[in-house]
Length: 350
Image (cartoon, rainbow, N blue to C red):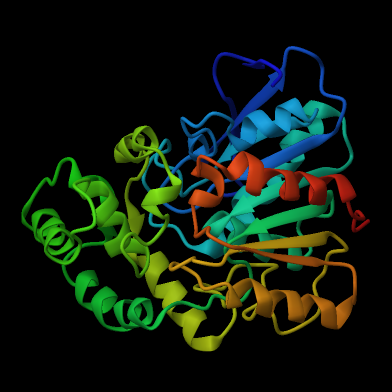
């Protein structure tokens, strides 16, 4: 494995289209990259560091070792940025296009590839199909993209628990498992402890309460190390219930729909053909209990209607949601397939 260093000691600051801050961290090997830039986009209520779990080989290690110029984006859902009551539409319009333009400007490369996860994937794909990312040629998407399909218990939580919770708080926060400041946080932490007995990590329990169905919801304990399981206590933060309400509408509709009307964005993102020529490589863990593998299968079928044989779908056995990146054996089972898809490339829109 090639040793890697940060290109600079602190992230590069950028600005979203509505003036909010963005953060980009460039990670390169000691040898100059021989391949172009790849942008990594995290999910909701975490941060770019989620791709650098304390495993033997992280996905960042694997990409740098393979010669890619790696960029980690912290967008408005990041716990490293000031909390904001965001929607997926805001990220699609304001965050991802300027982040891609910043990478193009910094690297001089006219094309960018992307590895996107969960709500970083949904919002990035929304931006791409709306025609806002012409520089992006390849999108490797994990867990969910345009067609969210969730377990029955998750749908009940979206339809029943989220409206009730919205009367008490604007945010839910798995880190309440470490520190629960107030009656409402303590009540939700108590619920997590009451219904989840699979481990003694209360943040792990809270993640399952907030994000999915299962015990736990986002990974299999047998696939992640005790060190990673403990590390996760500090890797989750607040997520707005406004996002959960948008996801409830999307699940009900069967595909991603807007939570607010913003210029240049459609109301229904799957209503017309994608305004991008980027190639999509869709990944799903067979055991994902946050978004079922059918989510990616439906998006693959939708994409194939417009350009058959161009896109790909991978459903990986044993894996779930985040253990696709944090699993001890992910460097053997997952990363080579993702890198192969990045290497295949795609076409710029322009």
